[in-house]
Length: 132
Image (cartoon, rainbow, N blue to C red):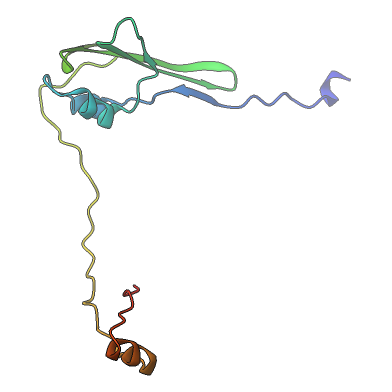
């Protein structure tokens, strides 16, 4: 009878901030909080009693089993990044963030002919706002 019971399905659970080594490699001493937040995202824990410390946690479980747990803490002095500790170590090599940039040719705007109604309005001094 035990063989006929269906198995229990356990979902994959990811919690916290996913921080990668590539993200940590972009951090530099002296960056302000805004720049750090742009790279790492909003911290999971920002303690009001320790405003110069941000904590990032990441926890991943697959089928109920712990797969990955990571933590990084960044420290600021006068709103400037001074150090970090945790599961990641900063690289000595600067790796700037790569942004996918694609060049798109935008055609020049062609002036359309005014309608008879628009010409009449223009003649009496009433101008309509241009619509895109």
